[in-house]
Image (cartoon, rainbow, N blue to C red):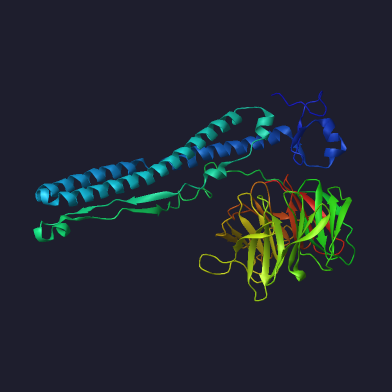
Length: 507
């Protein structure tokens, strides 16, 4: 096997892999300061784990997802539609022969009705067939691509692999066609129109898949998928210059090199990843900001609850982006589309999420389909947007992470998971209150939630399925967190002089 050549030391071969930097390295790289304290593994071990992941995805596509698409293909249903239409036409013609020319007009009217229903049925089924064929073609191509990667020893090609099976796990919408029938009657010339018969209405309804085919998100495969699970590693600590009387309240990062923080001393600070102070923004209105976020353009936005306003900093100039009357803004995040998502409450205990484009309100999310409130009346509601544009709110008082779609429809509530703490006896599993505070999402769509009660981080997938806990490296009461583009976790606890922990947590 040909090991890759080191990009830094061209005369050396890469025999190790740095998980933090996600690059192959040689022994000289490992000996230098950049990689000495980072999590390094043998390159063949990482290659084996990546190929295991590829092999499992390939098996899932070939033996589970693709066959299920084949089983729901509408070919048989389409044939039944045509066969039933022919049978209706035959019976209709027999009635026509009995009634002769007196009913020719009525016959033609009903014949046209059958043809219209036939066309409508086939149109719906053709649309479904097109969706299925498009998806199966993409799956076939994906199988071919993964097979090529799996058979390759090209390190760059294998290491660049990212699973895309999630996009195939939700089946296309299926429609069930209830075929019309003809009810012939005895001929009565006095009531010939009524006696001719009638066609039942064409009924096209959404067909729900059964438990085996409706959702592919919780398949039990053979062999069982083995995730690439690594132990979390504390990479570094950033010592902030908040004083002994000041507490951290918010944290946000847009780039891997800079980190914005806010606290109870009416000042927002910018640090580099090494912990060096870069800049500060003084809050002009003499009160504490609850939260901060960095937009896709690099502007800084933050909430001032006591003034019921949202501020924005552009090119060092601070201005009011939104001013409210009946509602108090709490926490916020920047969406991938450039909008701002804000949690807020009013004086009578109602809570909601509002989407702003600039200072214009675009969306208001408050109630579920049954008219019940989505969120509790508490004032700790950190918010984040997932990679599939879901809106995730850590509702502390409700003891749940509430996830809605981009359209505002409730998808699920995550209410925690019993934890087996390493500080207790191995057999002791404790069930405590799930108290969600900070929340963030990573590049794989996973949701990370700071649990103030269990003193750990919960990680779930984008469907709310629990994946694992992170024991949090000396943080006693986790409060806020964020994730950078390399999926490094930044975490703090709200106390004077608190440090920010940088943690690698690959799964």
